[in-house]
Image 1: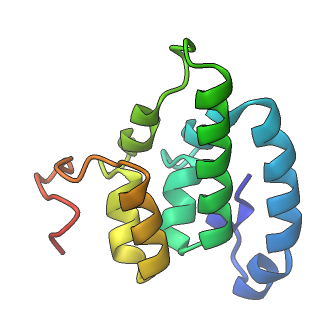
Image 2: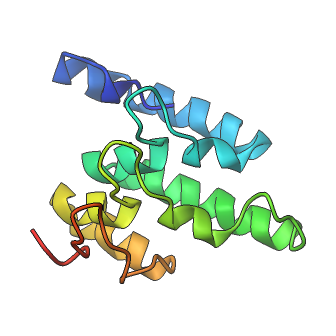
Length: 130
């Protein structure tokens, strides 16, 4: 979903953004859980999008999550708690990555989505610590 997490060339990342968003729209419409599954580096697509400050992708995930929760209220496989899953390599949540991204818009989206503001990293920091 987010090849920019492994791309070496920043220009490639920007050129491929719309294509990634189209692919993400399709995949998330089929299975929203894909946004929360860790990749090889231990980060999920939502972690990476928050770190990159990718507002459009974060909005897309949150929209699909909301839609899924409304359409499948008894589904125990997907929940709002997925937003608070920690990254395997750092113990950070998507909110921690949003806080260091430099994108106030991503941070606001994550806060409005109901992320746990008291979640701590492996180093016992909250999202407000630097």
